[in-house]
Length: 322
Image 1 (cartoon, rainbow, N blue to C red):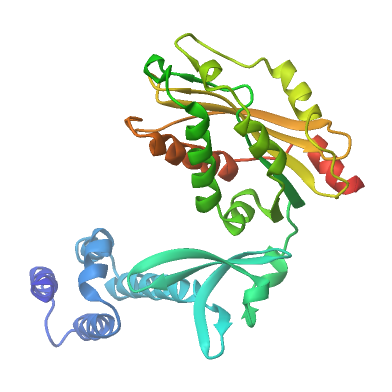
Image 2: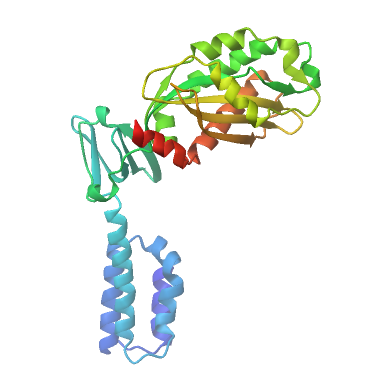
């Protein structure tokens, strides 16, 4: 059908088989259809191709050659996208486009059938890799290492009156376990662009176990004053590592608003001084009739926050002065 449209266009313009232009145009079209998936490209470029036979130009051959060069350029760009490679195992090489290399990981895009996928691989897991623009994309992480203290529910309320007589502490244990099973350190490293993500969960996990379920439910609007966050961090155990401390202090879960509100806090593990604090509220479409749906929402909120995280200047100075 598409071939017929080309012939119709040529016929309407009055080209004859003896014309020089006719021979050039027909040869060019045949080459084009031999090397491209013509159904895809005709739909994509028909707005460019058809006018070549309609406009009043002295040299229609030049116009058609411009179009063919356009197609060739497009094909060249696409082929260059996957000119890098990573060697995962012996004799297992993946052609890809490496998008980022840092001290610990290689980030790359590749095709799996018709789908384009993105992946992160630790340099320890790679036998080798090659990027044609490696010197342009080799960068350091914002932060070398983060020590994660966990999910702090010590000042938390669930705004849902029907939960009044329920065991909220057991819910917290379920939510915490969900997060620990779902959250992979390599994913957090990728989202936050950091070197390593380590755990120090004992203190907060034990504190959560000792909470009183009756005090964790309310039907009123509830909030934690930001000025009180430092006093919460001061209770955490001191750690003499060079890692940046990180914790999530949950403020409330609102069943009515389908919202999780939490403070994401970064601090000096030695002095306990807060370096960055972000209040982040995330919404989802869960019904929240099942306890685990809050756990799913916690994970989505963490992921959403981490992917848009920007470290402030105080944390950058902390990193530089370590």
